[in-house]
Amino acid sequence: MATIDITAETFEETIEKNDIVIVDFWAEWCGPCKSFSPIYEEVSNKHEGIVFGKIDTESQQELAGHFQIRSIPTLMIFREQVVLFSQPGMLNAEQLEDVISKVQEVDMKKVHEEIASQEQK
Image (cartoon, rainbow, N blue to C red; front, side):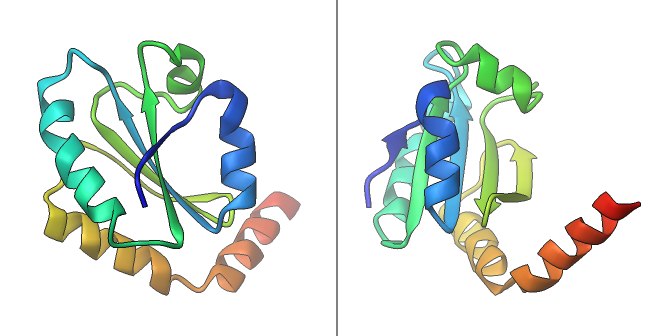
């Protein structure tokens, strides 16, 4: 699956309608972002059921601010609308595959139970 551009207008719907969404916060002027882009694209082609989105921090400053993006590239992974991974810096293909595997293994029932428990406190 190829990567998609995510904007403030499409963000919420993208997160709500997909089980796993991986978001790459990037900018055109960012050297490491340009180096990471082909890796991200390559890995995206191996995972049909996962949405690989890109958010341009220059044109989508509201989203970048909302998620307090201070360094790019920053990778964020949502599963069932919960952020399970957020890390600035580049990953190689093997590291990205490893993170994806770990996110897929998470018992989301327990995660949602923990969130509900925290919200009651």
